[in-house]
Image 1 (cartoon, rainbow, N blue to C red):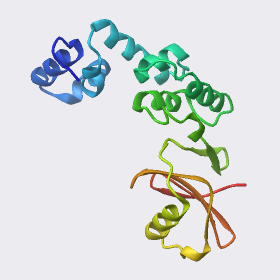
Image 2 (image 1 turned 180 degrees about the vertical axis):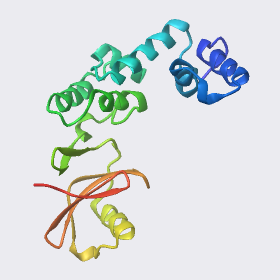
Image 3 (image 1 turned 90 degrees about the vertical axis):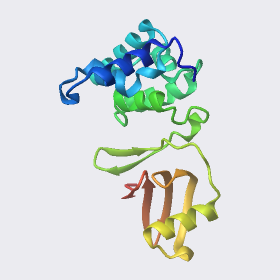
Image 4 (image 1 turned 60 degrees about the vertical axis):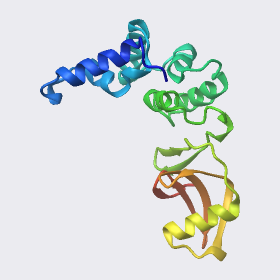
Length: 188
């Protein structure tokens, strides 16, 4: 990323240099330190901050705002899948926004699946790298100590890294979901 003539980066550097006590920074200054370098102009930076504030108030971003945050056009299919989950109460507007902010499942909207993990609680996939079932079994057993001959992978296993995965499996008449470092029992 070319940082020359980048308003966000210049403001980021100014805040880092001049701040004496980071605990007293405004929300805007914290936003600039976290993400400011992405935005080349003051208008882009202010629009991004407005999107973040909007979701912080529990409001849903529009498709255009979602595309702008994702920094790519035509993420409509992904937005539509996520907006439906917000309408069902499975995701919050802030959680939808995180998909745009971090680029989760951008190339594979079909990978956005969910399972119920408790009363009114859901785990939603944010990984889009598919792995073979045999590899998923090895990873599950290595991490959680299950007996490989008893593990049956259900659906498509996704695994991006040791702390980003979404693998649904059955073992010994129990239904499990390993999602982002946590092992859940799945409600049916």
